[in-house]
Length: 270
Image 1: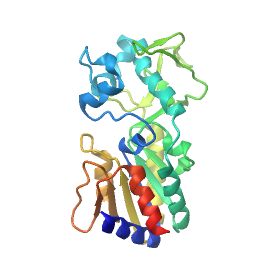
Image 2: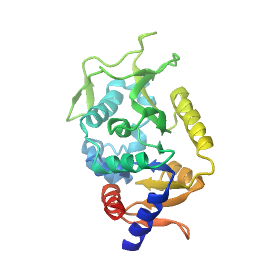
Image 3: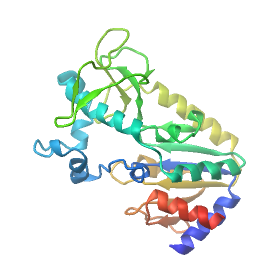
Image 4: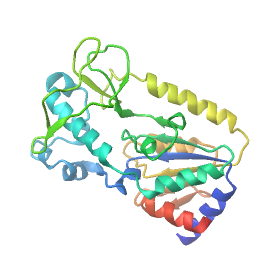
């Protein structure tokens, strides 16, 4: 592991462009819950254990039609949590390395928590492939995406149900929903994420020919979107994951948490 840290540090010193892939494991060191498997979800939301509801059951748009208070209880609780969470020190290290690189960085994340923006990353250099909880859309299909800033939700901590006023669509008055790609979701509006994809395409074209690195943090195998994206990128891969750290020959796998690995790499660089 020490050798992997040293190699990663040496490569990052020479890198001219850094591509960052981040999954749910990136937020664990900030205190965010790990929904890995039913037990991980029930540890964060024990009230759903008796009903047997798993994360994929609750992260489903049908609740906004059948029981919007339950839907906004689940998503409102997460919105409140993400707003209170302080990004861990690893985010600052990634920003510091990017500022040294000629072409900076671009972030590709499946997380909807907005932690990269909160840590000071430019919104123009982030692609949230599953959307963001900090943006809303109409649950009935009205076009348009708007920010959730100013939306305050009171959640019953025992039942995880919304109490009081829920967000509404400004056009039709129907209940709003997060602009998040949920399971079985045919109503998600991808316009914001498509614009982020356009930003990524431009960044990739501009850094063509530069020496590039890929840093993948906490991306699991259950929904491997981030892992696939990082493996397709034409740069040396550093995969940071305490469990699923396997890599092909020539790449670097570090069986560590995101913050600890980034701290050790930063220390080796200095």
